[in-house]
Length: 115
Length: 119
Image (cartoon, rainbow over all chains, first blue to last red; front, side):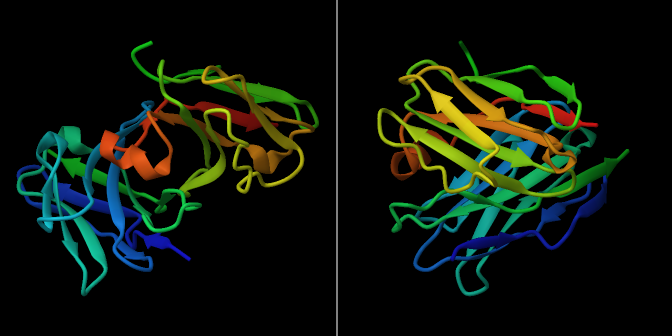
């Protein structure tokens, strides 16, 4: 069965510093991986996805994520955090080879950027 | 419309009452999903509609939960005899096609959700 884990409930970073939000997954075969962001009182928004190709994918708002097959990870990163990046971040995975599979979401990581 | 619209945005109901939540997907989106997000937890899949195919109801937690969708338009999620553990944010999402294709369309587009509180 496919699953995704976000080991940190909360990440605190000072503005201007680099940030990393961790995500590990478990799925047979090559996964499709996603990051979504949820700002306060807003719906989920797509940030980026990995399907195939370059392991480093770039997304919205200056975020990027690196697919690491050996470590089964897909950590979200940004070189310089902004206060406006404070939000709830969800990692998600899907097994593309299962016709019945759905996107499975992690439990979310709350990112707090202090000025 | 420009996005996925959900109503009401907030709903407080008494235990034992029935509630109905509404989702208006993006026009032309054939796939529609309902998720539940309990406080401090991840998104929990509830049900998936794809065109005129039979819906995937595998995520519905009990027979108190049901959902309908007419064609490729509005969907309603109904919770009967609500319990306190039903309190959560219920999120609707739509995409141009089912899971196999939606990844090429940047995943799903989510609504802002309905916050349900059962007292």
